[in-house]
Length: 259
Image 1 (cartoon, rainbow, N blue to C red):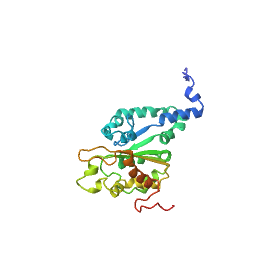
Image 2 (cartoon, rainbow, N blue to C red):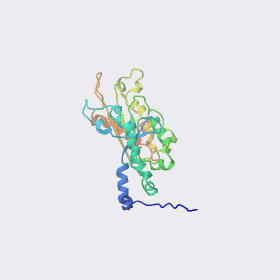
Image 3 (cartoon, rainbow, N blue to C red):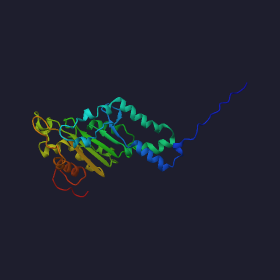
Image 4 (spheres, helix red, strand yellow):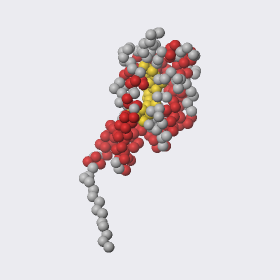
């Protein structure tokens, strides 16, 4: 009985794999230096394609500032999710590329979470090596729901232990000044602003290298916003930065003791 032999043929050598390692790493840095939204739906992330960044929106002239949900509606869609995963598919090419580039996804990308629950879900589904590679996060306070007015848990701090760069985007709406239910939901006093971002202040347990904060405030019919210009925003931003970077304790108004 004749046996049939199957001959495997190899394609041409990969030009990408023939490049020096340092050149390939530069390519991976470019591919994975992206802003990634963690969508409200569990297990779905999308690539940010908004033409105007949150920082630019916060400093845009009055009347030209857009709402977060409007600016990011398209880049949080299923189509954007497909674009993101099409870029990550290169990791499945071969073991060498996966070994070189998989950690860079978490080291180079900026992961955006629009509230505390989404952040906790995102962290909860990461493997230990992914948590160890996570470097940059952007947190958003956009819903007038006091989502960050909690004490940060030790579990979350532990999972964020390797984060080195944090960004915070605050978007103010009319109720942030004129809430009829309770004054604690407004930003009219320093104590209320501290309460609003209590969870964020708890980031002082992390070894952060940088902190940025942007405030998008619009002009309302009832009254103008108090944080429309960089000069008006500076005191609040400096206060939050001091709390996060451990140069000021809002609870005592004194520089913290050396730990």
